[in-house]
Image 1 (cartoon, rainbow, N blue to C red):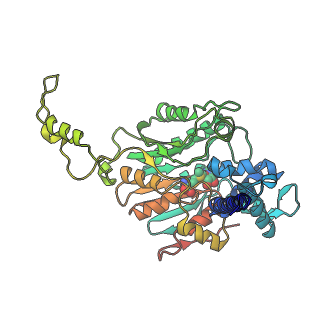
Image 2 (cartoon, rainbow, N blue to C red):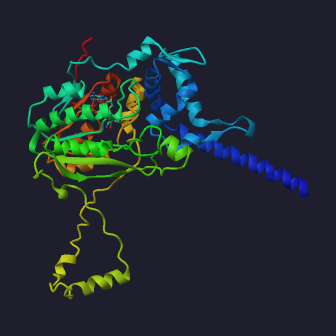
Image 3 (tube, protein in one colour):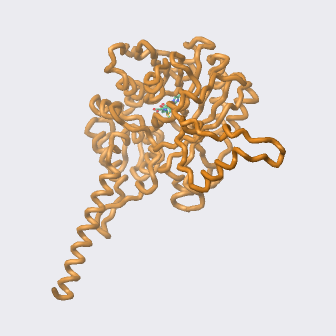
Length: 428
Ligand SMILES: C[S@@+](CC[C@H](N)C(=O)[O-])C[C@H]1O[C@@H](n2cnc3c(N)ncnc32)[C@H](O)[C@@H]1O
């Protein structure tokens, strides 16, 4: 083969490889993404006042989805005509929503239709509507502020929730940090009264930046101090949630590279009294790490030592009981909870997927730690009701509340196959 034929063959191979890589990238980006984009896109347009230019929406939708920065940057096409695969997915979702009559069909400006606004319907303030129930579960369509009034005082063993996080600006459904702190303080007071004396409040929060700087807002610390100082709660523990693929802050971590990609969210646990009914034996224990030969030798010596302080070490103290290690407080789990049957049922019913579900591992570990079978777990900002689903799986009872109709209806699909499921009509 001549040199030029070899070069031509290599160039062809490179083109083929590039095409295959781009296909693989496109598949990675698009897998399950379109159904997830729908509600955040409608919410982003509503937040912008009901109409917006596409380029002002892509970043906002990615933020709402907590999208991995590498996925956000994936490109496709030839050198002179490359486009971001994610942005294209958003455009395609918009196209689908135009077809469904949820966004007006004009290009250049994307505008919500009345039908699109309906999809974002929230329950009217002041109303608490029982939307579905099971033998061991009650789901309310309600704002948390009002749902609290429908729950018996001192009846809950655990209040577990993941609230919307605060941001700059006061637009649709979003709070500035001071507003958020005031709102949450009021809710913490209500939730404390609903808890049994041995009950626990667990709140999942993520860091936000001080506007215009890469500094973190100390709102998580302020929230904790308010719960302790003003509501008499006790800081019973922290369970940091490490999500390895979490999106870094777009401005400071991704564009400017002056902040690390923050892969940890907070889960703060408060107890009503210093004696919450926790039992770590309800969690699966962590496996022991493989011991090196020198560590095994050290273990064997330890039982026969006298420490410098003069006390003897009980050889039994280091013996392994075969049950594994005491469970750690660290939760390691990927981003948005796996879709599974919830996602496929939402698609079948034409309901938008909740974009900010937490993985089941979060409620599972907290419920196991803080409650016994049969006890009641309440998620006041239930979204897709991951908490309720896990509570039932673990033999606990649940109460949930969520003000967005679309999300509450989607959450019902987690339970609608069960014989004890009963849905109620939504009053107009
Ligand atoms: C981060 S999401 C919770 C997701 C949930 N953990 C899941 O796994 O699906 C926060 C939820 O709080 C809801 N929310 C917003 N304002 C609320 C309010 N005043 N009362 C109750 N829920 C509210 C939002 O509609 C959203 O579904």
